[in-house]
Length: 147
Image (cartoon, rainbow, N blue to C red):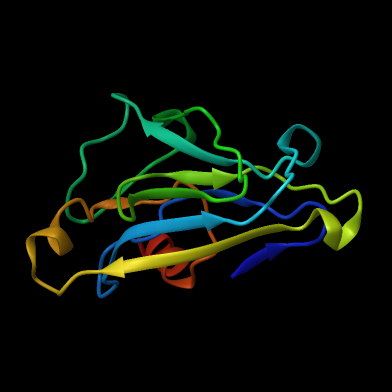
């Protein structure tokens, strides 16, 4: 369970899975925010399109930059909404969040990752992109810094 209960919480653009031994293949985010007002509070989920300017995915993984991405329509984190995407293919971010009334304005979400057996087709497909920013995942930071 993720809860943003303070002002300024956000995630920069990142990809959840960069390959290696990480078996996560599908990300599911379930929002639990009745009465959420994203115009006032922010905190929208923003998917990013990888443009034609990006290098082709490969081995070793390619590094994306801001020039390779365009934001798509932001998704409001309203109650009973489920967002699903391929963990290793969709760059995404979370806009800065504001909680004018403290925890009453909390932004709540449950994230679940479905995993695949190592060596399976779904495990191997698409695991060749690195996040364009240093993100929340220590593995991602380590992989970015070794390139």
